Length: 347
Length: 79
Ligand code: SF4
Image 1: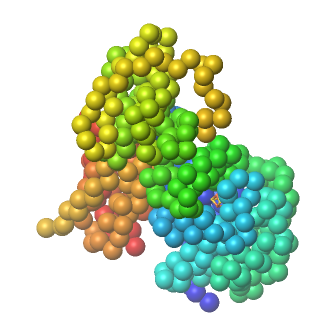
Image 2: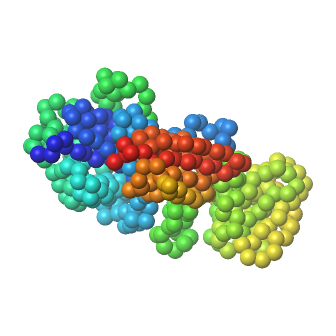
Image 3: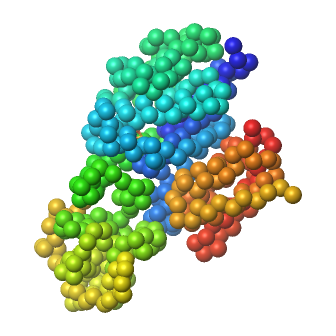
């Protein structure tokens, strides 16, 4: 037996993984956290992009949880490898483009690799049997154990008593009888335990830990795949799906229109890679054009973009159209009346 | 003289600046300074939080226009 057993806990930033780590720590186990960045994570940066003055405190919840627990947190970039999980999920998607079961298997597999590399003894997750309809069912638990390769070094302390004993329990590193025995969808036991342990604050993402559970985000991602002709993406693509209004008036192109100064500043960073429209006559958004827009398309794009600036009721709105390659030129348009905007354009 | 490592995380959104900082800090001896240049104001929160949980020390944070510089000094305690 190791002197002090060591566990790596998957920390999402939510309540369950915080509690799971804590109950294991309370049994004298050395715990360090691991958090995976897929590119789809719901994080403070979406606030950071929006106006700084209006943004709520920008904190990384996983780091915040680690601080509450007093443990180290290792944040791992899995952007590249995660693509295969999103693009080809063996177990399919949930209600939106969230491949939760494949995602869990993948993350536990990465944690297992980390554990072996660092000489840790077991893995802790905040999963609770029956908590989520697709990925946290009794039948999916063994799938995660098997497909991640972690097998019985994977401990879910919040519901371990409803499961066969794992290695850390059999070795006596963790006393099974002292663990909570949560099951099902109710959040009440977690909240009661949090209070009992002295936690006064925690974050609880409603849908899940990532943007893939969001219907509108998934619609934008599926639009991207449809118009690219293949299911693929780069980090910039999926970050841009979190920013601005996305408007597709044609199969040939879509617009990304900033909603405030903060987004405008963020989109500025992409000016060289996209044709774009800069509003000159009035205060207004920066608009990126993705795709191949011919001169008529540029005119339509400008008329739509004009709707989102202060000249929406003006006779004419002036823009600079700046192509990726070539010289900028002036474009003068009449803003598109609302009656001519097809609601289906708004992604 | 302890080494200074510069990390250019400009135009990357959180948590990428902290991931880059963590990668630069890995296995560095105490006293090493990691200078992270970034533009996402979230880093003003994340990098100090990351430093605290790992027992490192933030010795300076600077904001000049949109450019944010955070200097982290690697400490002994961080095994
Ligand atoms: S919500 Fe997102 S991060 Fe969480 S398990 Fe599902 S796919 Fe993975």
